[in-house]
Image (cartoon, rainbow, N blue to C red; front, side, top):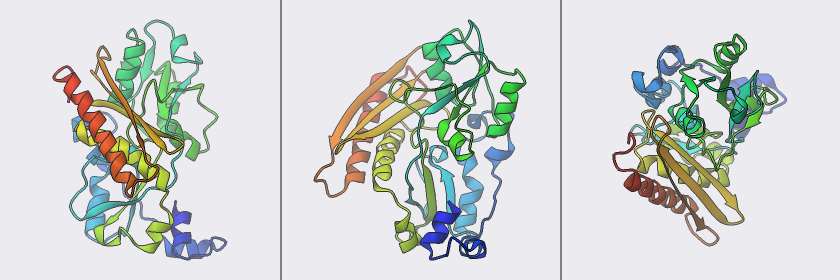
Length: 297
C-alpha cells in the first residue's frame, strides 16, 4: 500500500528513495497488538487496534493510516474519515489444519483455535462438538501454535495469508454465503483527517465497487451495534448491477442463528454507496428485530 500511495502522490516507483520520501512508514504498535492473552472484548473491543493510530492522526503526527477494515469500529472519532478503500482481496475465511482437509473431517471434540467470536459461533453452529480455544497473535504465531499441536485446526482471513505470500497454506476456504465473514473482511481502509478526505491522491486509490460492497456490510454492522462482543457476519457481492447482501448474527455457542438476505439494483442510482448502506441497515435491523434478546446484541 505504501507504493500505491506514493504513486498517487507522484513518486517514481522505480526509485525506492522517492517512494520512501513520498510516503514514509511510521509503525505504531497498538494495544490490540500488544495484549495477546485475552480476547479483544476483554480489553476494549476493536478500538484497541485503532486508538493509538487515530490519536496520531488527530495530533498530526501521521497523515493517513492503513487499517484492516474488519478491525475498524462502526463509528469513527470526530474529525476522521475513511477516505479510501482500495480493491478488496478475497474476503473468505481460510481453514488450516494438519489433520483434516475440511471442518467436517475433524475428529469428534477436535480443538479449533480462533480469537474471533464470529468464527467460534459459526463453527459451533456447524460442529457443536468442537472444543473452541482462544488463539491470538500474528499469523506466524498462530501457524506456529497449529504446528506445535496446540490446536487441530485454525481459521484465518485468507486475504491476510495472500498478502503475506502464504495463500497456499489453507486446506479449504469457507463458503462466504454459508458463513459470512466479518463486515469489511479482505478490504483495507485508508483513514485520514476529514480535511483530506477528497484529496487527489486519495481519490486515485479508491475502488468504487469495493466501497459500495463494504458500505452495505458496515451498514449491517452499525444496525446491529456490532462489536467484538457480538457474533456478526455480513457478505456483499455483485451480480451484474445488483448488489446482494447476506447478514447473520449468532449466539456465542452457535445454537441460534438469525439470517436475512436482500439485494439492490444500483444501475441508475446517483449515490450507490448510500443505497448500499441503506440495504445493510435494513437487513441488520431485521436480524436484530428477529433475534431480540436471544443473542448478545
